Length: 164
Image: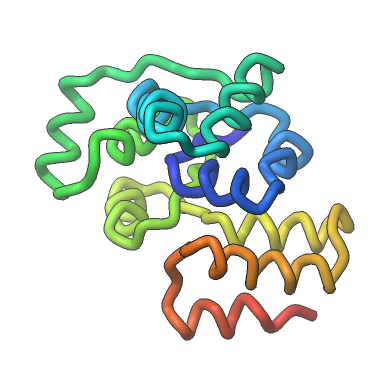
């Protein structure tokens, strides 16, 4: 089981690899704020990835969980992060589980709150290490992320491309 913020869901969907989350973690928990951002707003804006996440929820391996909004707002304001990020952090702390998030400021907040955040590249690397994807596919997927406007610093890109 793992908690996810919006970005890993969106970009794994964009590169047709959302299913890796089910294979590696069985269950993915989303706070309501992340669901609203990814699926509800995504569908209104015509993003195809929103429908993939919605389908995974119908299949039962993505679960939407309510989080205390007042607590989330306090964290969001204190650390200047989005509501969905704060909800994801609270949910991961409550469930004592890992969290997927890519934005640097949200990852730093998670670390301050004693979590070890992982991200989209971690999921791809884990899939490669577990032989769910080949080395060639892994390398192509990193480039496909960039082609789909996934932001990463040059240093991270180069590090991601080095694989044993």
